[in-house]
Picture 1 (tube, rainbow, N blue to C red):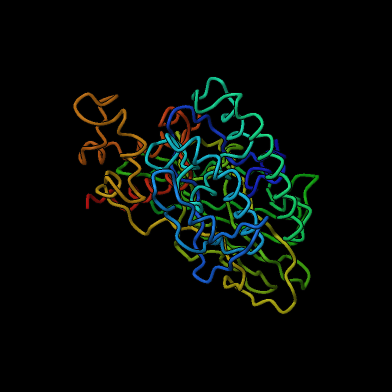
Picture 2 (picture 1 turned 135 degrees about the horizontal axis):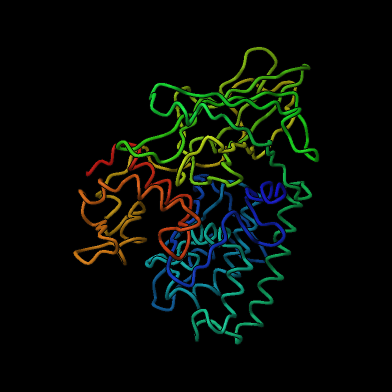
Length: 425
């Protein structure tokens, strides 16, 4: 359904609190969300008498300070107010009642960690309604959860809705989803030519005609090149590159932000290469929205000649006449902090932020009794199964871990290890 597509990439669940992928987390299945980068020039803001600096220095019952010391920021003044409300409200409740499983030291989503900024992002990823419903559930994890929290959760939900309304007012928007989704396209030649590693098929959309009837139209055309992607000789989906946009008529300039892909009406959200696009397209020469040759991997269980491709942009809007043409922008882009390389040693480390295998997979895939014979603590075993690992962690129908898809950030970390040659160290 097209409406679900346009809702899929709302960065903040402004009404319902739901997000892109809402998965059950009764079993430990996720640790971190898409993190914000801390602004080193963060501005201290007050919300209901609570400063970010003051909240971050809360003393825990064990006598330790929170990991955040001093002021923190999302990098956005309006959203900092929302962060402050989370810190003084939900975060305090979650640390007190949910840290036993959600403190970041377990596989469960880390919305109760001492780091308020990390907790805030994971909380948004899960959605306030999902977190709230589990908090009052008699079966989720009693006695930490249950009806005895009904009063507290009711107040927190009301405060959060009010804070979201204030955020929308600060941003000067009615909360309308500005994402743009195209109609689907097919190109059987992409699969039919998969034996030819040098072949790239072209997919082209005219944004004035290849759009849903109820969608905005733009005098723009965009093309991408695609081929069947292989890892160690095994197909893992598609690679796409060179998203190139041009203006088909008129003299207006257009600002284009963040490009994502659907295949067969399914958003492949672990892809990160194009999520920080922030470009101004001007009349004249076509503009490559991303560095030439910077291909993005779209992981799928299988490829077929009938596969349908669609594009989604976070937004496309007319730019001011003085805007500088090209991929540079004074706007803050969506942060993509996926590392340039990931090693097996990092995936299995006992500390750090890249140890996805250890935190997400070792409970079933470690040692001589590893499930399915896949020992992810063993480099040779992991390398031999790299393409299968990549496929399963992105398969929503039969995901690994079984509790549900990991966050897109975690999947991107594993993808980086696979696509850079599965280095050991």
